[in-house]
Image 1 (cartoon, rainbow, N blue to C red):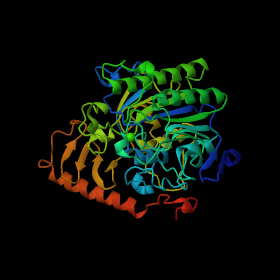
Image 2 (cartoon, rainbow, N blue to C red):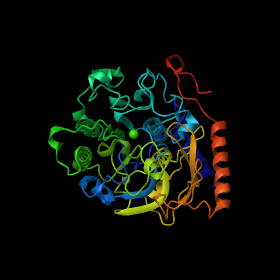
Image 3 (cartoon, rainbow, N blue to C red):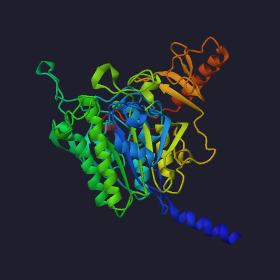
Image 4 (tube, rainbow, N blue to C red):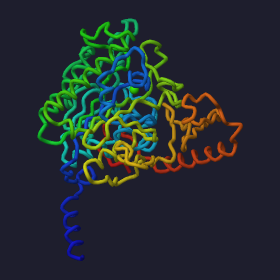
Length: 454
Ligand SMILES: [Ca+2]
């Protein structure tokens, strides 16, 4: 008995170490998967044919869902780009890490603090080759780019594709040009955006081929369908939904090419592919924006349409085919969940907000959401709503909805359940105060980039 304990302890001592980033260095289990995390920009819950869109065709994404699970109650942590991406990659509320105040613009010298631990750093410490292709939007000063946050490779743009002179009239006199990066170097200014979807799909396929004998993690953050919309010649005028449909169909075709590459290399069975979006559709832009389906609200709103986005996960070795799961999960769950797929749970050296939801993705009998309460922070930072179980209270106007019975947030129950409203309001302020009391600062400028957080 004692001897076996000693052997176990010795084995653990060999398996664990601590890296420069402060995460555990762990040798992944033999069955640890490759991971491809696709995070498209501003695509709505209703923009897939499998979600009921009548005129956008997404056969490849529909097939991906058939070979995996669709989570119908997945939310992002913020309804705009930078905070949403910060939460996905760190497992934290943007508020906790100082990334809650709207998106990063070209003159901004700050960004995600390098002292935060990203999903890429966690997986890199577990032996993965890591790459970020597409849009970053977590800081573009030196020291804040993907190569400083755990990625071995970065090919893409540092912020949104509309922070550019493309499609702006000369009268606009827009000051900033869009740079295109390879690693830490700008290799182009004002790149041809019509190439974007194919280019980032191509980089993904190249990286898979180059690292087929290792484990890899690819974060494919397509800049589309954020406006201005662009697609390559061969997709022009293809979709009855117009240019927005063309753009989604090109992303879908790219997913088909990536999946075919995995099949060809015999990697499909042990690659976990996740497809989701950073926030709801930009419906202010009318036909240039997508659809949130039956949800009310859109990008920039704490109504469900801003936070609830498509979520598909496929890993043939572990996720039963054709699964549909209604449990509540969040983008902050991705870091602990994906880390745990490597065989050993992730123990963060500092407070994070996400949970390991692997049992839900894998449809384990009786598995329930570990997220008891979720706070909805507005695009510019303030707390606006709370969800607990099926209940969602909007703090500003005091509206209360049961978002499982009433996903469209159409039937306000405020007057029928006043005690519940008071309880939820108290809880929201208590949880928020807790986070605020432990805030870790974002990086503010070049000089401070490498200073510790506290
Ligand atoms: Ca976005």
